[in-house]
Length: 223
Figure 1 (cartoon, one colour):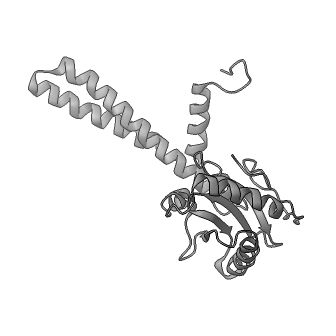
Figure 2 (tube, rainbow, N blue to C red):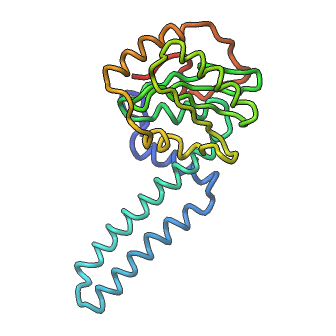
Figure 3 (cartoon, rainbow, N blue to C red):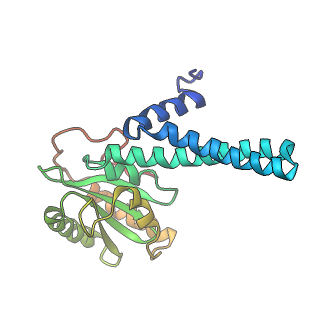
């Protein structure tokens, strides 16, 4: 049932998430049922032999439901990553889910082959995140690194290649990779770095062929 603001309600969102997840994970129903009833059965058996059936039976129901919910969330997230992995702009869609304190500018560099570089400013410094084969994005990152260094000569500029090749970071681990980086900048330095990069972001850039994921907003830093 939709809410007054036009957005789907909680149960509608869960149903939609389940439907999308099942397309890529057909066994999800049986897995969740197995986890729920398996845990409930263990508590029921323990309650029978311990003479605590009235207490352990509802407790087992709650624990089984909680465990199934947690597993469903994880498998739904993994399914969502599989759906967008490999699409141009997928990394930007994931990066924009970073918590407060990270500022993402999607697609600061794009090639005709749809290789992309996104820019993230945070406590580690300026992080350039590429999408595409390593043989092509290495040079693209080098060019963007040099361009960024002209505006921020004393700021750490880091490079991360997102992809499925050896040495690249897989999409589900991208945000975790950034959050584990050393903290090199203070909040005031982050603000100054963003101000200086505004001039760089305002430079004209050719758009790639084909659509970008709807969750990205090219050229607009996220606060």
